[in-house]
Length: 115
Image (cartoon, rainbow, N blue to C red; front, side, top):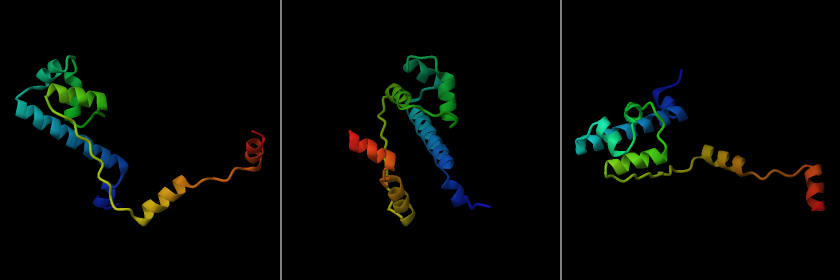
């Protein structure tokens, strides 16, 4: 059985946490602007209240384009930041194996020489 911290390290868990964080930020911006989901969809120029509802529940993957439309409607800016973690031995090994150049087989070598 996995520990809670091990479960948090699963890619899907991180993605779900990001969706919830995004939903919370959109909700807080809506609250600060005192607008409803219906009003937000009108400001976005679409009839997408149900989409907004799913985003706010953390049940929807939000494209960058839609995220930008939401931000414009809220008179806000989107800021996305990648925070690099310190390299670990495991990461270094994964990086090395992903970038390892494979030697061409005999057929590939012959074709390359003929070009």
